[in-house]
Image (cartoon, rainbow, N blue to C red; front, side, top):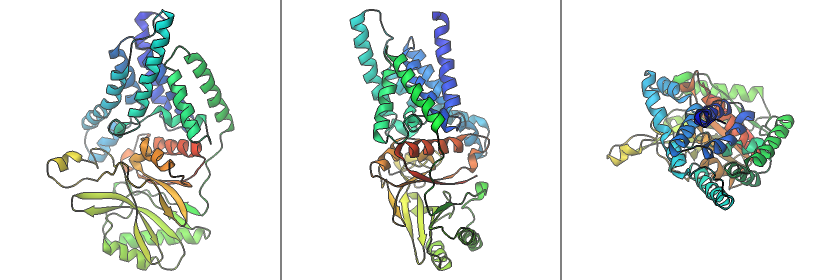
Length: 399
């Protein structure tokens, strides 16, 4: 390859990997395996930064429009947040980049080893806080496509494959991972749905959970009862994030009284107000009982999680509990709960997997993602993790 064209082609290839791999189609996620190859072949730190930027910005391309929808603003505010969100991804890849391979055999081996260790550091740092807070489009997510059912061994195999892609043995790694990809694509089967669970997707746009009236809650209860009547084998019904609005004693009593009778548990999203902010939670409601089930570990930065407010002595914003309760139990089933943003990053789902859940329960309120692929990417990520660990899945989204 001409030296003149090498750098532009690496950047264009990284953009293509990010754009196509994170389009919302789960079987395309393995395109991310080429990122470490492109990054390691950059001729300088600045080119490595541009490779990382191209991949990340292409993968997260729905963010500017989503931010504009959320704040009812023009695209400029979304573009600023989009570029800001890429900072940690770019910085980590730039800092750990090292010079390309040299011709001397002994030095080449040393360079390969150094590059492998450095990329391992990148993989780990982008999976965990603080850098992992914006660690979207992590290549490890593709493990579920290449190694379905392998569980932690599949994650280790994927990590090893990504590392080898940075060395002179990358053709062997690419062929091996490509073979697994082809086999998986030809034998792919739909996800198992959790037996006895039923999800209800809603289409209320930005109005979801913002109507504090009793009539709104009664309509929800009626919707749940209608679902139960249509599917009498249902044991658990899942509603999207934020469905119940603010979780107050009034709302709790209304559901406890209005939901007597059927032996069914309703799991729904709500906001629980505290002195210094609020918690984004899942609530479990069963006949005669209602209580918060799970507190979101990582709310959406900026729009929900605003740590700078507390540093300035101000209240408000969703509270984060990075390594809070990773699992919960519903109707005797151990679940891995993931609310919205947690479906885009790594450590929440991996922390949950350490506790051997039986079902992944994923909810979201995606009204603000209109005209973007964000919800499709969330569902693809959840599908990949469920395939990797051989779990059933239940999802509920509002659009």
